[in-house]
Length: 290
Image (cartoon, rainbow, N blue to C red; front, side, top):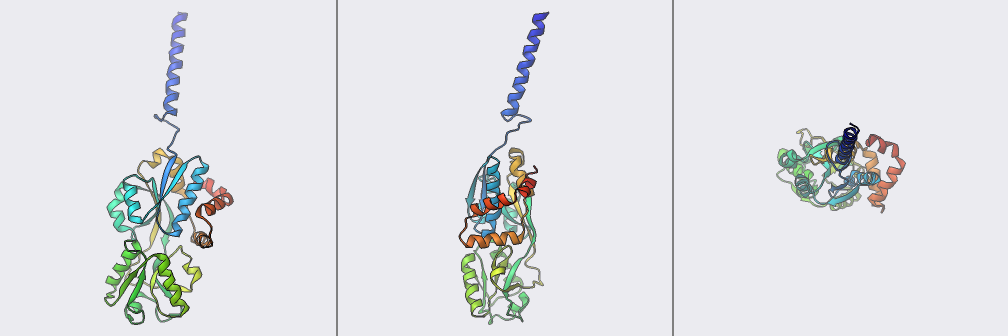
């Protein structure tokens, strides 16, 4: 009898050891998670805020994070193919609607960074008689028959094309360029107090640097959007810490615009992220639900 009892105890001990191994090796109830992540970053300064904040915060949690820089279309494709784990600049439901229609079923929205983002086209405030897009459409000569927009293929460039069609601006040509080139033209025109109409949005320090105003949009071409973080469908299960961060992170326009101004002064996004995290650890803990 003693021998039988000892044998049963030994078997029970072995079974308990197997269950413990299951938990530490990724079985049911596993506490391990994927800690190597890649985050997609498009070529806009404001996007560096959630990207590098995520990187610094997750690295504090012993993650290895890689920032992958590319154009928007490439990043949507990469997320769809699960070549990256997250894309932090999804404008929904309007500005990125073509990408959302093409790829939307292949990823999940984890959280919202901002809601009801202001965007559209703007003019200098000294143009007191130009207050709506209809005013622009009625005065093509004043604007030299030109609308300035950012890169072709971007959500704003596509919506600018729709605006020109909706407002029957057949006399206008869209001048596409990089954000920096467009703003250089804005700077030159405003210094000479001439007329210009161009893509505008927040968060961006253009509203700090220049005295400009959004134009009214009575035909509702420029609908407001939320800016969201998209992740692969399995991220919530594989990396719950990262998913919590992406689900809870919220930013303010003022904070992001201040960040962009510091970038232009020569600071690196990683340096800015490290400083912000040090000064706002309580907020970070809330995002991580600690």
